[in-house]
Length: 104
Image 1 (cartoon, rainbow, N blue to C red):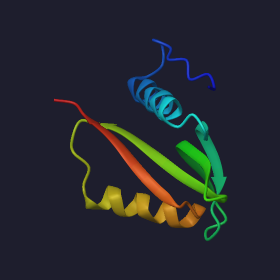
Image 2: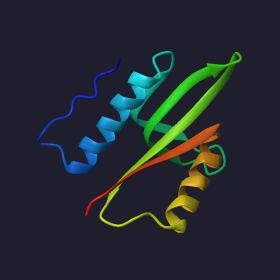
Image 3: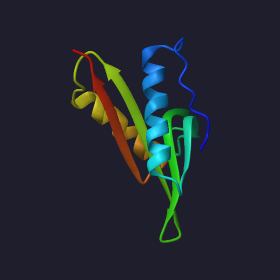
Image 4: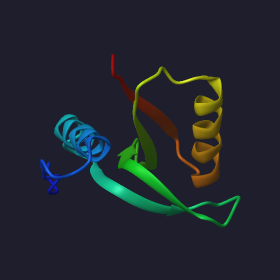
């Protein structure tokens, strides 16, 4: 497993992203999990920052799953989901997953 060392000096949002990457890597032992990945947009031509990417093969077909982590004080709204959906399409991901923590 790659090093997703959680440093107490990191901001809370970064510790949350690293925790999610560690969990995904543990659950996806046969996949390549990358924290803070950079993937070029196929449609936009823009280099996209991806919190966590998962690359695996399913039935010998390459799969790309991207994960967006959000540690907001309020629940996500439809615009957050719509924006992430456009990133999924832009990078050509097979699937996308949003992981959210709500602070009370």
